[in-house]
Image 1 (cartoon, rainbow, N blue to C red):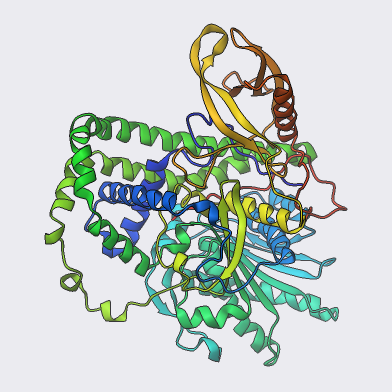
Image 2: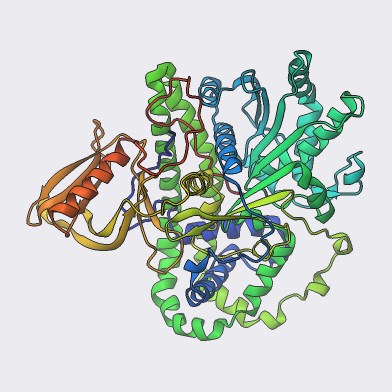
Length: 627
């Protein structure tokens, strides 16, 4: 089994998923502001606060509509997701995860777990040429072409080149199709340089009288580029094979809107797009950003803002100028450092298999690159937020005088093209237990994709960590039909908020509703605002050890979780079980299982190679990717 690994944070203070809503929404606001003309009327800070007001309204609507009824028929549903498909997606996700590795030896080790070997790899991006690798498996008769997602500022610039242009495909079903300009240029550039290597790899199988399974894969920017590249490769393979229809697949995770409506329909025969719940990047089309801007302009902000204005102009104005500007930037840097540390632990187990210190350096490099874009976005948001009290008030109070869309229209407006998520779309949705509780096949014009969903998870739903959780949860259910998916243990815990409980430095906070799922390696706690995304603390894969501990003045039913290392700054999580001895025994057993990296029952089937000796901990890299 390959458990994900994540930094252990104090879940009484910070979500294990993200450093906080302001950084998340600031990152989104910065990206939208940079890439879409329609929101230029607002500063990054204005857009951040505007989305926050909308989020509050959406949250209240979700409470009223009972989100736990998510198992009911979903608008836009046009099919079911089968367990074999879900397990195939889980295996392919390992290859996509590995694309974020920057060391060739680590990439080779990751691919070995799914029976693949590197055929070729370029692990450094240039402008409009993302990193990629080609791998093959003789035993499985497979060829993978995997394109990396956003992990550098160069990649982010490609994301930002979001106008539509002709795809220029000779295939009749794609004649006249428009595509995302930056991703189309990336696909053309990659194939102009490297198509011969891909075709040669496929031909090697055909010379042996084999017809390989050829899959193009990617995440985020890589998913959009993979979707377009698969069409262009289909054309080249058809030519190389004398007009025969080539067998080519594309499986794209977190695919941005990158093809027009005709292209989306035409690609359904070979392309599968995987979407996790409220993933914001999947919904970041021009038409959806226009809709978001209209929603911000139309919100009934006066009533809410009048309640907040005194607070904003006194306390919050100071906080926006000092706390937000300084602390948010500090938080962004901390998040990046934390991400690097997580990656280092992910790789630590493979060092035991002979990878050595290169693992640590590779992890640090990849983590730093992946975090740079998010940190830059948060820094921009902080700068904008310093003026939110006065600027947002004046901007919204004058919304009637805001530039009318017709007045701002340029000569190119008549040529604007709506882009959508292409192919057959598999939508994995959340419940309070986690991502992937429900899933269905939806159309590119399904209502949930026709607007940017504002929720506590819309940024983290874009990460491969959440895609892995969703696929594992759904697979676990489908492969254990008749077994109710329920927590292994649940109840109220007390979590220590501080550093030295034996000396009274800090205090105990009650945390109701905590739970651990049997197929996961993390401790979860419901969101206080009723959102579906729980707070989460990952315990597996990080070298954590849990032990019974009697805290001074508290009683014998404590649990201390810490990293056994020489690092004096290693974080420690202190829990107390108020339910007594029997409950304490259940919690301690479940937490120790998570720390040991052992999945409970029921669990999803293992999709890695049985004959390959795997390390106890996972070294597969988590792909954190933003605009």
